Image (tube, rainbow, N blue to C red; front, side, top):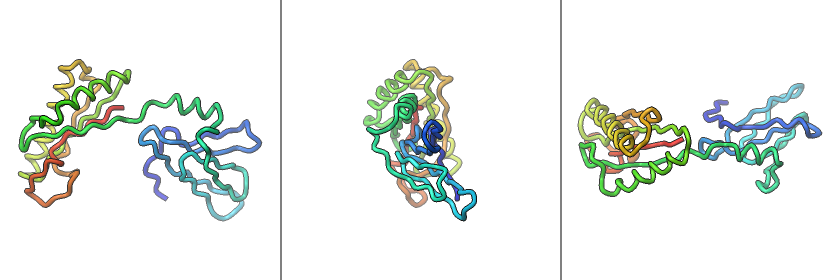
Length: 196
C-alpha cells in the first residue's frame, strides 16, 4: 500500500500501559491523519489504521482500533499535541492578466500574511506563482516566477527576512480552475503562499 502523507506525529507507542498501543493523532501538516499498517506476526494479514484520534492496542492477534474522545487523551498525548507547531497558513493572491500587479482585492491579504509570519518565530514562507493558459508555456513559466519574486520583494519591504522566503514559478501546470489552452482565468492568475 502506498502511504502518501506521513504526519510529523503519526503515532505514539505507549509502553507504560498493559500492552503497547498505537495512537494516530492529527498531522501538523493538514490536520488529517495518515495510514499505519500493522503486520501481525504469526498470523496472516495486516491491520490498517487510518482514523485520526484512534487508539489501537498492539500485541493482540487481531488489533482493533477505537476512536478516542479528544477530551480523554492522556496527559502525555495532550502535551505532545500542544507542542506541535500551528498548522500551515495558506494565502492566495490574485493578479491582473499578464502582469505582476496584484488585484485590489488581494492587497489587504498582504497585511494578514505579514501578521501570520510575525506570529511564527523562524517561519518558513513558500511563495509559488501560477498563471492561466493564455500565452506560451515558456512565457507563463517566466511570468509565474516573476509573480512569486514580486511577492517576496513586497514582503521583504514590509520587514520579513528574505532568507525565510523561497519563490518558485509553476506556470500553467497547476491550474486552480481547469481550462483549455489560451483561456483567461482570474482564478489561475495567482500566487499561493504557505507559511509554516
